[in-house]
Amino acid sequence: MIMNDFALSLIFYVLYMFVFMYSYRLDWKRGNWFAVVSFVLLLGLRGNGLDYEIYNQAFRKLVENNAPLFSDTYLNTLKYFSVHFEIGHLVYIKLISLFTHNSIFFFSMLAFIQVFFFDLFIRQFEKKRERFFLAFFFFTTLIFCNVFNGMRQFAAFLMFINGYKFIVNRDLKKYVVWVLVVSTIHKSILIMLPFYFFIDKDFLQARKIQATIYLVVMGFSNAFSNELRTILYGLNYAADDGYSGYFQRDMFELDTTLSPLVLFFRLSTFFFVLFYSKQFKERYGRLGIIAYNFLFMGFLLQELSFNLAILRINIYFYYVGFVVMALITYNNLYGKRNELKGKVVTYGMIVLHMAWFANCVLKGASGCAPYILSRYL
Image (tube, rainbow, N blue to C red):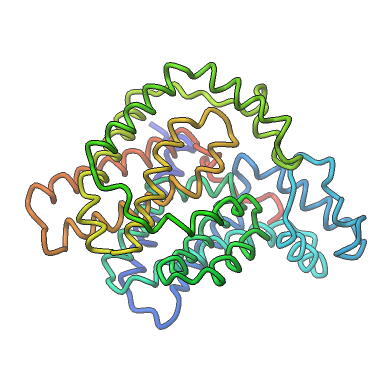
């Protein structure tokens, strides 16, 4: 039986994932240049992804505009287009246009921003096994799949997590400056400014209360889904022009019907993280508290993601799960409290996440599969 393109893509991605993970077991003096270069080539040379074609069209409109960078003519190039680029993207597209009009260089730059800041974050952890698991959950919590679609926002997310250290060190000035820098990649990051003042507080301690809150929100979101959709649709008229389309009912309302696999995955992951939350926060201190708080809010928002606007905002919360899952896994398998029961459950979560990754690739989530090389090669 001949395998289809989705299955071949899955085999390719799994092989790449293990090589990518293993590269973090090696000694690198500065950055993991294998991970950076291979990721840039993989994402830069591809021709697939849900947003690929619209990004490609936007890039071409910009490179064909010879007006000066800060002129109204150039800055308004995409005013009536279906995608809008922040100033950071406009600057490097203008620089690219000086040498070539090939969009491969644009997608390669986006991929470089993503993987450079992922690598920069991962190097904050000294243990090779911690880095190994961070790389694993980068793939299996579907960040890898989603960068084929939400390219700019995942770049902003991977930049933003490098700013956690400013919250840990209580350095408001650097945190604000960093968020402003990230906003040149995706301005939605500005909503994260107020979190500096409370996200490092350990206000989520009682696990029974947290479980109750989550289950109530899950039940509420299903019972009142139609009402919530109507409210979010109404926000279309109050939203920023560049992003108001995310609230539109006809184009971006999402099907939130949970399949048994999705329900099992979400509940298993939530209760796994919840059960080991105390040990996780004890082991990683303020960083652990910050990551856990963001993730808990992400779990709640995921249940309320009735359209693309909420789903996209939740990137800054829900996908912190790759950090939490990786560090809990490391702590359970190699920490001081590595009990047999904890190991068995943890290996079960590893298998579940592998199955989740395989399922999403085989379904072509975010257009990640089948993998296609760019026609501009």
